[in-house]
Length: 480
Image 1 (cartoon, rainbow, N blue to C red):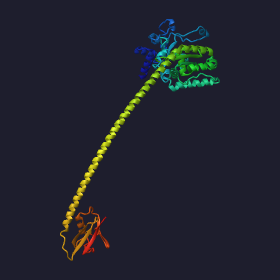
Image 2: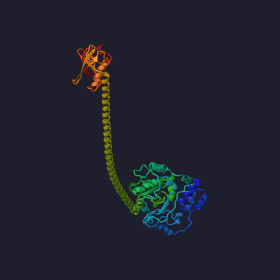
Image 3: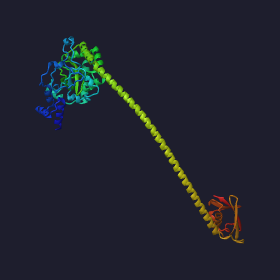
Image 4: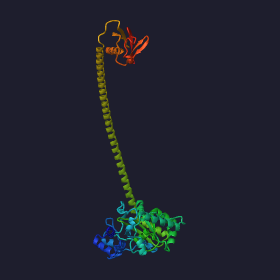
């Protein structure tokens, strides 16, 4: 079902018929053979036309497709310069374009894409392109028989079309490589070559090569490889060549209605999957004749090409100006944004520094308050300890044989003395010193100088008498 719908859509797009029922009947009558149906449709001639119509052309304000009848019929035979008499009579084609040719889908879809609707090609068709459009498609019963027709129906991939072009160039070089001068055929498919000619603002020179034709060797050797002709061709045209034995070359020969070889044509892009045929040359020609023919085509199309080039340059200039303006705007915007970011970052930095300073101030204040509180608590604890130890000492005993007189000298030079029972423990001496509140620390030792004896905390359980401090002793304070 999808295949049937695709064929129906293709047939409507190519023929211009909008009635789906009519298109379905035509396709059914041809066994849903798309190429056969299109070939039959485009080769029919149901209407009679004025023979003088071939010399008419459109003005700039007419449309290419002015009637459906012109889309459906082909009443004009391909006209080229067949003999010298036409050149001598000053033969000129009607306007710039001789014919508008619709390309086969397989050629259009087998390359990078059609140039239809491309910017800058509206004016290519204006000022002399014919007001009719001939649906000349390379399908079905062309020359080459059913087998060739069947083989040409395969859709070309981009690599296939380019591959055929490169194969043609290789064969041309093989057969005529002895000549130092050769046309600069592009190694691309037809649509890519057409696109190249558009981008370079040149016409496309098409050469269809028939290897078996008796006039081909002499034409290739004597004309195509002529030094003067090659220089003229490469300077003014994009050259594309194809063998009619290859798929794309065969289809182009059908589209261009090539009836005699060697066959050359000059074309330019037109809208809606079509090309404008500006000149075709059939049969052998001398280099001088070919140059004269092509020179006339170049002169006729020069205003169009110059206009296209100027307008393209204007578009590029405008685009460059817009890009420069956009770049300047973006640079100014980025500078403003950078300044704004810098201002915000500075504000955030100052805010962070202020917050950090406030945090440190609070921490220092809290630490100071905590230290003061802890110091006060320690002082209160020492006061309580002194009071408790002072109470634990009891009353000082009177002098007697069992009473020891103790004198304590502090590091600040202060002296304190008291009497103790001889059996009092050294621990009591430490409690006595602590109760006086002279020292700020509890890390100290009691010592005698002569002889030096340390009465440390390890001797607190000894009595004064056992420690040799009875009946009197003079002790010093040594801070540990």
